[in-house]
Amino acid sequence: MRVRVASPTSLTVGWTPPSNNGGDAVTQYLVEWDTSADFESSRRLPHRGSAVVTAATDASFTISNLAAGTAYFVRVSAANQVGFGAPSVDTPASAVPAAVVPGYPSSIGVSKSVTTCRTMLLSFSQPVVPASGVPCGGLFGSPTPCAAGTMAASGVADGGARVSSFEVHYSAYADFRDVAPGAGGSGVYIIPMVANSDGTAAIQDWAVGVTNGAPLQPDSTYYVRVASRNGVGTGPFCALGGPACNGAPLMVRVPGPAAGLACPTA
Image (cartoon, rainbow, N blue to C red):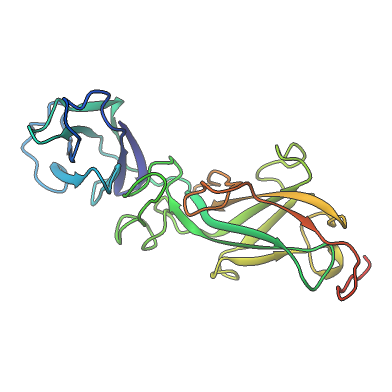
């Protein structure tokens, strides 16, 4: 079981099936939380409570409407047709809600331009999974969006502070060895959230508008990764596609001069 901070008012809890299911399939999980380690405080919802979720559809859960700066203890129990087993706890067993960096950008896609040489096109969506990697709900491979009220923006895993921009890295190396996170210059492109609220942008060479990066070389392969940024800092980079940063590697071979492609010189 993992308990992770998701925002100033929420925690996410993730788990895996028990190693011993008692001879029958696990059908439900019971999530319990309290401000007391013995789970017997006199507090009421939202500071003490429980929820039952279905094993087939959920391997994570969000505890919401919590108080920032307060430590909450969490435990999870699995159930089969006989009943609930002994609970499991994380180490440490408590977490304190606070604003954190945003999660992984989702559904990232990159492709070569069909109109301009030395150009690649990038698309992405706002974070769905918090920076901790524990989804707000659903399964780890198919997370459900964070519920309204748990984050600063509804449905966005923004850590409790709205996403302000995205940091894009592109490199000829799969390990991005020539790109420094948080730094400007070669291989870095900062996309303001206000100007790109639809989550789309074009990374192009100097001649067609890049102001923070190096010209792309024709007929060359580039790797791409994207991170979300808020007032707390920069979240984890995603270099994969898929709704939860769980798809194929993001790489593209940009076109060189060819018939039908505009190819301005720098």
